[in-house]
Length: 261
Image (tube, rainbow, N blue to C red; front, side, top):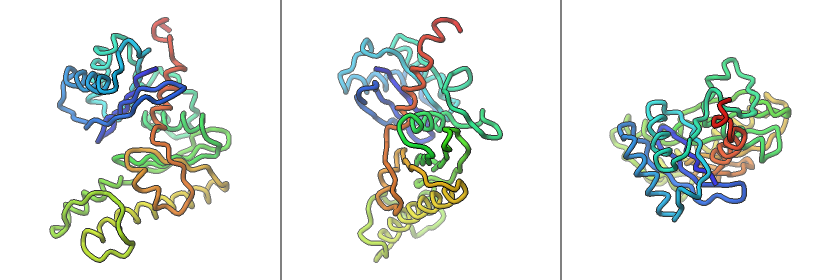
C-alpha cells in the first residue's frame, strides 16, 4: 500500500491504495501559506481517521501543479512515513510517450491520468479531468499522448459569473429541477450544469472527428460526478484515475532512488 498525493490548485487529494484496493480518498484545501508541520499534521489526521499506521505504508508519491508547496508537502509526508516520497517530474519513469511540442510542459496530473487510462481502458481514449480547470486529452491507438485542450473549470466559470453580475449570488453545484429555470437560482444551476455537459459532449464530438475514430471516454476529477450524468455521450466515471496512475508510476520507479541510479 502506498500514499498517493495530488496537489491541485483548489484541493490536495490524498489516498492510500494498492493494486487490490483503494483504502480511502480524501480532499484537503490547498493552502499555500501552510507550513511543512501543518501539512504533516493534516496527513497524520487523515491516516488516523482511517486507522492506518505509517508502518503499513510502503512509500509515497506526489503529483503537483502548485510548485510553491510541493517540497513542503513532500517533507511533511516523509516526516510521517519515515520513508522517501517520490515527486512526479524529471527523472521519474512513466512509460508515457508524449507527442507534444514541449513534452516537459505537460502537467504531472495529466501524466498520471494518462498512465492510468492506458493501463485500464481501451484506446483510442479521451480523458476529461474536471478540476479547477477542465482538461481533455487524447491517447491514440498506439498509446501515444497526442494532445488536448484546457478550458475554464466549472467553479471558475461560476465564480466569474457571480463576481461580474451584482444581482447573482453564489449557488451550490447540484441538480436543477428542470432545464428551463423558473427563478434565478434554478437558471444559474441549469446554466452551469447543462452548459458544461454540452461543452463536454461537443469536445468529444470534435476530438473524434479530428482523430477520425470513435474513442473510449473517461472522466475524472472533483467535479466530474456532478457533470457527467447530464452529458449525452457515454462517459465512464473514474474518480480515482489519477491516484491509480500514481501507483503505477511508483511501481515503475520503486527502488531506483535508493539504488542511486
